[in-house]
Length: 314
Image (tube, rainbow, N blue to C red; front, side, top):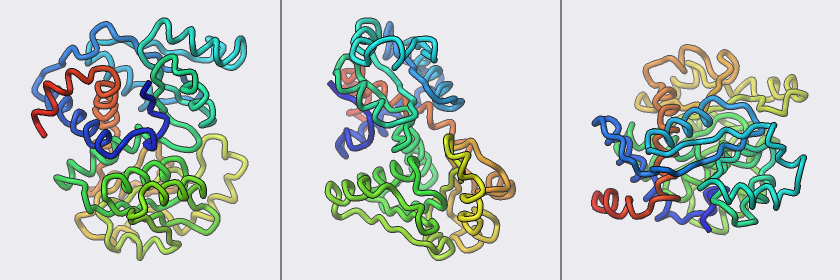
């Protein structure tokens, strides 16, 4: 059974096909077409964390493809009323896939270990693969291609950075993390990337200004993620020199695009002038969450449609 716990679960060819499928379904929507690809399919959204983009983009995307969704919050008793095995296997009797937004990555891998129903990682503390799909789709649209493009992430080497580094490795893109010492990406994640993609161009530096000098896309995220509130003062001090502001943008090419996975703390990791400026692709990026995830859902649940409608475009 195919799961999407992280980008490590799929091949480079799979990834390219998902992105191409997303491009096709987006173009069809723009033309006023909403193909009934997931007719009578039901996807459950199992969330431990609050969400705007992940929930609404999945619910809307599923509906546009002719399927339906169920939002499962705390009331279903996940991890409380019954064993994880019973919970997951029962879900598998009712639905076609689960999108799980969990506090811990182990919760998502546990669900997938029972092979009762395809599991999609909607965000964990380790990675955010659905976000990375939308990010590359946005870069592809901005530059009419993504291969060889340089993505610079300024800030914390967090779950978003992990997925971005990996997707860049898979698609022959350059990735640079500009962060203060002590805030690098997860060591085991980096080691696995190096083992599976030894030719990947992934670097880390403490010099954000030098990093953005050759950037095609400059990406940032909040300095204080959910669950890190106790570290707020320490983190604000550590990242004070890593704000994506007008001064930093002046060191980057004029063609560089600005990305942010949102929600943003304006005036902290990014200024109003940059996120609302002419180089910002942030709103398009948010919109692409739905299109990228539609591509993922079709790839997981309707391969026959891809063979007839996407493969012919390659």
